[in-house]
Image (cartoon, rainbow, N blue to C red):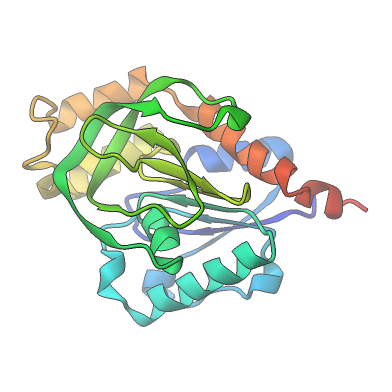
Length: 235
């Protein structure tokens, strides 16, 4: 197994690492999953080679003690050129840690919808793809970050900062079991979504049609290789 220590911060029982586990296993990376919303425990920055933060039902504006400490960890890792990937709530945590506002969006996006690439040629990302949205809050872009994707309704869907930090408002990591859990245990959140025609069963079935794992894998590989952490861990 490679020495690379990847820390995943999971913020809900319903939103697991999914495809991230597949990627880590394929590379032989060590994956350690923590639940700070339950235990308030966070590893030190010295223990982390790559930080991945998942989604969750809470708002970053709740400003709980563990959220604040999580943002402090993000800042420290970013300053030390350690790769950080934030998904949904995780992306909002990154934005807020850099002083950007997180606020309720003009619409609630829950379900599958298209996003369109704005920049990011370096990552060789698709120009358009259908992704799973599960949010009603959005964020201002952090200063000096580059917008990667927008949707028709919400402009800031993904960004990259300093080549080692990426935030995704949408979910590329979710596999069928995760989507089933989300539509089952977060049923009320689906109400009043802009994607009015998408019932819980349609959201689940669309998950079988849309496999975005390869895009996620390319983003994860980019963060590892760009920051040269794999090389550093094998010297």
